[in-house]
Length: 106
Image (cartoon, rainbow, N blue to C red; front, side, top):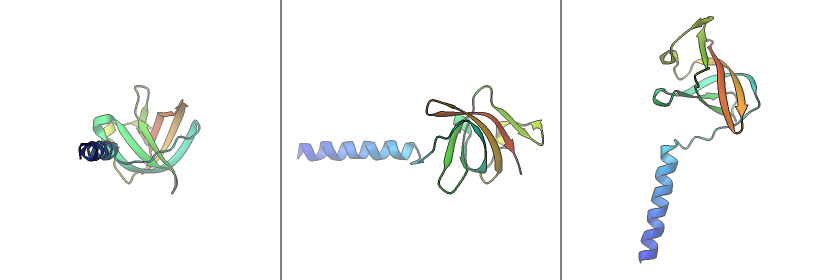
């Protein structure tokens, strides 16, 4: 009985961790420039998820060097919203993608 409770507890913890991570499946691409649609904005983490194709979603945590612009003018992070078209320039650092420039297209 104790073994069953331990297994169920472990399973519950794994489910909570999966839910906390949003269950998002994200992709790593090569350094470059990509266009896509913002799927989600997480202001607390300065993070956006960008769909660049039906199969690829980029998870981008803004860094100090990230430039965010619309019509060549710098704009604040709260200008971002789900559904917007963006062009992102990313640098691959290991398995992480650092957004160097995010341009709001619409």
